[in-house]
Image (tube, rainbow, N blue to C red; front, side, top):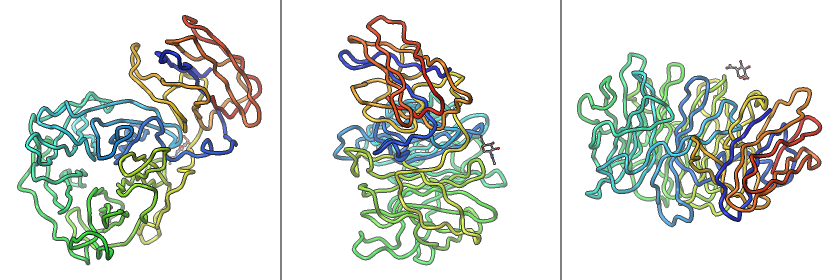
Length: 429
Ligand SMILES: *[C@@H]1O[C@H](CO)[C@@H](O)[C@H](O)[C@H]1NC(C)=O
């Protein structure tokens, strides 16, 4: 039976919940799967596929931010593009002793049986620099590889890729665009950074009324290869930004401007692209301000599935609340962590004293939706690991039409075993 862990509820709040569902057919936001993280504001998506799972690294906008107040980097993962497991904080500003603030847009790459995380941060001197952290485990902990910046030219937004011949490249930059070769140790540069010549043939003309720069290129590059073509996707025009891209015959270009991937939309004046292929389909990650309280400083990561045109060009994509379709199903007969969420409302996650994460800050009517749960011929019991810092609480499981079950427990209760009737349950707390 599905097994979920939820502990350390806040005094006076209701602890716990967990749900199992096939398809939710409820009105309102429960139908949405975008934004794909609801327990905090997230930005600057950087997915990495590893062991048939999408690991989504993001930045984190503090609640109520009125500026880019970003202090740590977060990780989520999914094997189905709909239910995302929260892995918590993988790195924060304190990881870099020479950094003072601005835990901004980074990217992780795997090599040498390690994971390398390139991020821009503000140095104590005030200038921006790019640091690199390393971990033996994709989940972290990530440690500063150098004890100093990898590159310090007061520019931001690193993206990294390993070319077919094994040569790794780092691209980055705002307002300019730079690249450098990385040595195979991934933590040192091979040669000096090269500044890319920004021409309108390569990067398009800036929208009139936008800030004055030579081309549409603004920031947030994401580089990758598909077939024999290299793609450089980036935030363009400021502000508000849209997403544009260029292609080239090699990782160093020359670049040809290809147009808009995603128009300006969605309550955030920045956007930030990432593109992956997973399970035979292509996905575009971005951010907007679509959560309640969302804005240019309280952003949320979202994803859309897309197909390349036959000539390799990328279609123009819109922001949706539906998000990407689910791949396969979720198995409720093995333990699933409570922090595996297709959509939720009102909740946070926190480090659990027993290890991993717990869902917390649960109030009346908060819920988690878990999507595409394969109950097979039906389930008889539901187990959840729960705790209350207050006077206990109640879990309700919902299906497509009716509430299926409620259970009450008190403080110190070891946790409920719930009877779940019926099958094909859509869920909800
Ligand atoms: C995609 O995922 C489904 C369900 O897990 C699996 O059966 C299928 O083989 C996968 N396809 C590809 C191309 O990886």
